[in-house]
Each structure stands twice: as structure tokens, then as C-alpha cells.
Length: 95
Image (cartoon, rainbow, N blue to C red; front, side, top):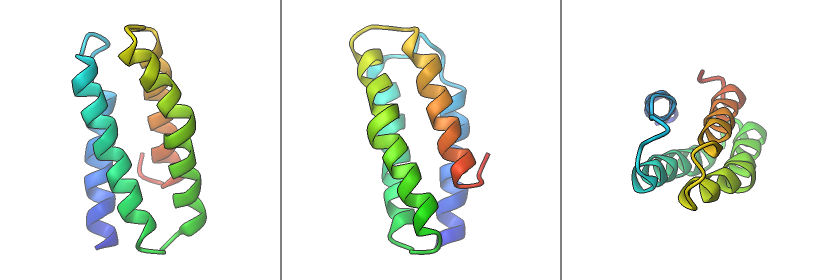
């Protein structure tokens, strides 16, 4: 299960990286939510609890801040949001 979740997360992170700054806020939010759900599922596997907890915190705190800015219409926040998503992948050794 853990390996399958890692593959799905890698796919979602790669797709997120490919989102255009002009993507709709709804599409960006859906992609963020899919990644959030996968990290939460990974946390339940207890395979690497420290990395999963750090990734969860990064998503819920830092990335969410930039997602909120994107939702408010700030297209420049998308670069920071993508950077935070890349950090999630690095934490989980996916990217």
C-alpha cells in the first residue's frame, strides 16, 4: 500500500508542478486537496512518521498560506505554492 501511495503522490506532485499560473483556483485547490489526502493516507502507514508529519505540517501551514493567496487572485503566489509542493516531495523522497 505504501508503495502505491508513493506512486500516486509522485504523479500528483508532478501534475501540480505542471499547472499553469493561469489555472483556475478551483483546479489548483483540487490538486492541493488530492496531495493533502495522499499525504494523510501515507501518515496512516506509519512507515516514516517523522517525514510524513513534516510534510503534513508543510502542506497545512506553509502551502495552505500560498493556496489562500492564489484563491484570492494573486497569481504570483503560485510559484511559492509550487515550491512548497516540491519541498513535500523532497521530504518524502519522491521528487
